[in-house]
Image (tube, rainbow, N blue to C red; front, side):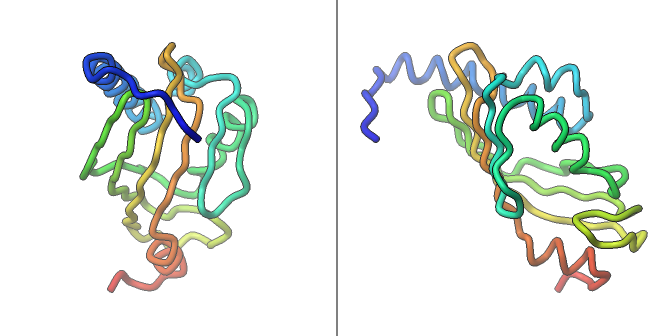
Length: 152
């Protein structure tokens, strides 16, 4: 897809604005603040994840998001290792941890602390609403821990 190039001053201004939006979105997700998430997500949002079929639309995304962290307690985004922003697009790389307290992704509880890494690509509308997210994570390391095997 060919996209028109934006003047660098417009791109820089958009990037600054988009940084505020993505940080607000990540904070709302970390706090599981569904009201704040609702205000930051477009009605036509698309979520893509390496482990799931795409989730299309705000209602489906809200339901999917609410069920996603069932089985994990005290989930923390420990750090954002890298954040790259260009205009309305963001790439974020981060580390999570949580305690595996119930069935999660089909794995029964181990009671152990789990650590995993992820990277997401976000796209926002000019109105500051998330319209697209593609999430990648280290599925092998996550599932190994969920099965009760230590990280190597």
